[in-house]
Image (cartoon, rainbow, N blue to C red):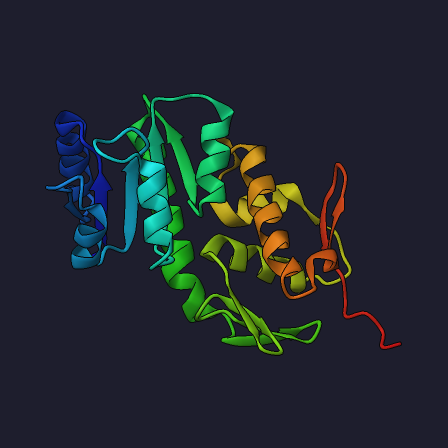
Length: 230
């Protein structure tokens, strides 16, 4: 049974989510002290976190940042705010998805199921280690390392990188990446993919590989093969 931590101060909404998700055999827990969310997260050890942006004491962005400093657990944001910068900020902080209120429960459930499948089945099926451009990718730990530097990737970033390097020097279309990541294009914006790829490329820059993922405007992305030695 997967455990889901719902960080939501609207008691009515929390109770509805707890009741409906429990009907799908999820173990759902909430927050008692919104000034101490990180400690409750640590004690709960959830498999997935659902978090609202507007919370007492500190907002959801703050707690997402704090959680990401300690864990790569999947995070879904819920928000009644509809400004595009909220989604961009969520993704930049390491969230896996963003759902705007009011939402249809079936949409949220589909996102939860897809993320859990991707997160907890993907590692079991993937080869544990792979080399690319002189770097070592560990799909089990979601890291990429080169020489003395090791970079942590989110599960989305690691999954995107895997898709790209499995088709090195070939264009992987945006549509195919969206389908692979979220399984249903209707439930994700094109901008979400852009944010994830840009975040991945920025991390790769720190080990000198940012330029090895090339954008093909209007088509998709290419992970280039290792550059010839000079």
